[in-house]
Length: 361
Image 1 (cartoon, one colour):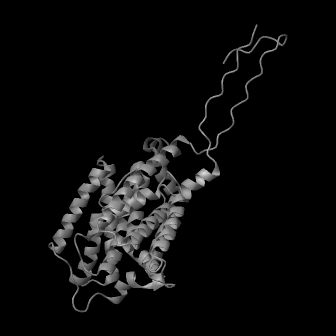
Image 2: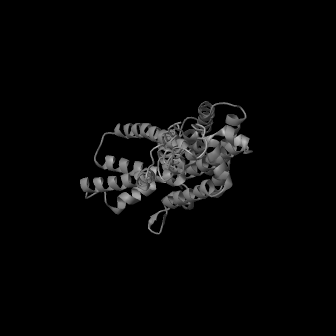
Image 3: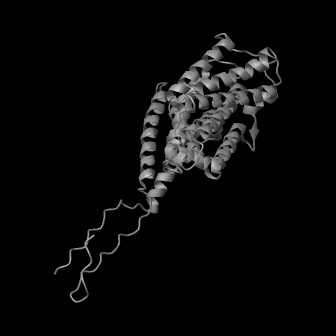
């Protein structure tokens, strides 16, 4: 009696080596270095200078802070479209309290940051307990925030008096530390706090589980609603802080300026999920994404490109970021980059005289 042939080994996903993982994790860093090299060769007199570095670190600090704010709800699988409206209201409210109400600027800043946290908390409550999609809910609350901004300003601008704003307040943005613009250190400190919170604390790990599979998170006992509301509240606090920086930078209350930062924030947050930790939003990846955008926009500007190239650059980068983020997330879910054990060796064929053959599998 002839033994049945051994079963064919199951096909297994293609194993990716360390080089593939490094390319996925640090590809944006390499792209940043290449952009710096290309623009330095094309613009040797203007791009590789200290003024360019200071300009990037200073001008991109607020977009970087707002991108980090957008990243936190994205970790849970939600989106906060009220960020731009909240930024506009926060910076207008700071100037309103200092200029019109006569508050000391430290108290005005603290009140606005706390108000940002309350706004984020309300967003989370509407999304989770109202069971409204985050796109629709935050778009609605953002429109209400914009209405409050128009009510406070009367549709005009808030302009300080002849004495101007306190120097200590404007130094929040204009000052330097160790020879570099002070806002750059705000961004680094905020990114470090978020990295520790998301990567090293149970709270952040629970947020990642919620973003990956909310139903599974509930089954293992994670309070999904409460943690998601906390994520929105943290995002709101960061938006309030960004509003304080914007007020110190602009020194004039413009009710419509915050909307210009909405698209760059989401481009940075989504593109950042393809770097450092591909497939999951992370603080360090967001910083790398903001660096890519900053270098690209600065180089394009110094080349004398037309004004319409900026929204074209952001729109194209957003589509690329969404595509790459989705691809990285699918690979993470399917485990395509994980190591696999070798297939088991087939059993030897049955030899006559050694008892009955094994049953077929």
